Image (cartoon, rainbow, N blue to C red; front, side, top):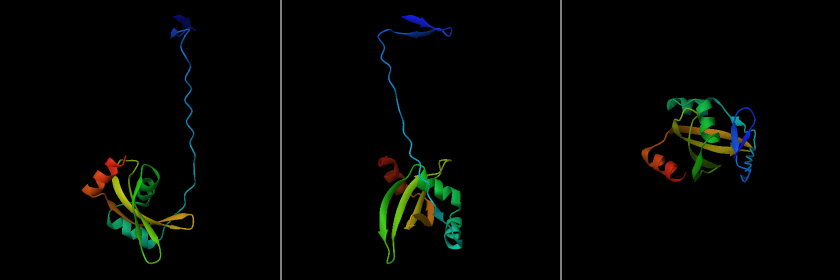
Length: 116
């Protein structure tokens, strides 16, 4: 073993250098908010920020619900603070319109953690 520099790091002359490269892609996502969907969330004590975090951070789409005028996505996820929520949203063009949300049920907990 050979000493390298004043910090006394040890390197084996036969050691291989492994380079780990992580590439992040970042997309800007627009959410559409109005009095109706904000009020639906507030009934379940969910903020707009929590709904957005749930969709964007660590989520899984567990179901697509067909409605007469649109498809709605049932999204299971967690907020930055770890709150487990179910958010139902639809796409309006390139934007996400949250329809409503509520705390995950026990069944949804199982689906979420088994799907990970």
